[in-house]
Length: 448
Image (cartoon, rainbow, N blue to C red):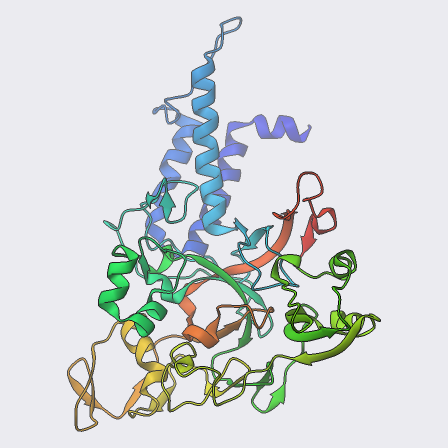
């Protein structure tokens, strides 16, 4: 008997799909869903209910209804793709250059949710195939809000993983400038001026904030330092991944470097600016491999790294660098030491280190935080001198270190904001070129 003949047996089909369904319910951990075995049994065996009521069964020779066939195809696609997006894989597009030269602007990715375990949707009432906006309006409803819960994955986040996550500061966005950091606006312009200039604000649930992709450089419990743009963890310098790049002041003997040569070694020409007064390029982003090739050009006179040191170049720069207080003399290239909070760990709490953890306490873990003129700290009305964290946190940085809005500028990424790990680049296009030159053929089906 062939496999096709075996599958034609209604009892075999019922057993096969029931087994898959039970395994899914066990993974889901909600055994009320076992009631779904009833319609599965009826669909395959008893056939008392027409579960696919929109689907027409045609008699031999009967003319097919094109509209019903399209409806059946659309319903099937919505159900199957939505199920895959929630539990297995989801497609994303890289909108910026913050991860170059690892992930390029225009890369289309499949992101694995199985790696760290998929999250149960916290805002389930969403228009299919959208994230948070459709036709300029919100594409979801907050009438139903679920608590955070993550299913079992293959492993936890590792140091060095590229990670897709919900932007922690994206819980409040400006209507006119939804891609901007609302909290950075408030620090620099004040809340009233920010709301007026931004046309009001939109408050979004945690799972409906915009998606970011960065590299995880520090795990819960790590102590992080950034020295001259490079990451150190617990006193040990970390691996410099091949895609990591800093910017350099490249001075030439008077002219421009051949653009074709720069493009050939992998430079993003969109980020380059030639200053005739230098003469040269004030901020050329280069990996270690690119740096050696640029130094070898005969037209290049000198190459110097652009490293920010304290005191800052402009008086309000501390408002841009986490934790946004003058007490911490940190810059993008000289940052820390900073301990990364871990679930269940307790830290002493005082007015000096409170800026590091205030947003965790209020926005991510939902407590009321108040400080008194006498230096006391109250959480939910109770005076405290320490705090115990309710979940794990991570520190993310873009590989394009001098052109990346990352944890140095807004702080920690909570564990409940983690979405998944980029798995595969299935398409990559360069918006600065015309078809077909805009297609990066070498990046097709590139494993991340």
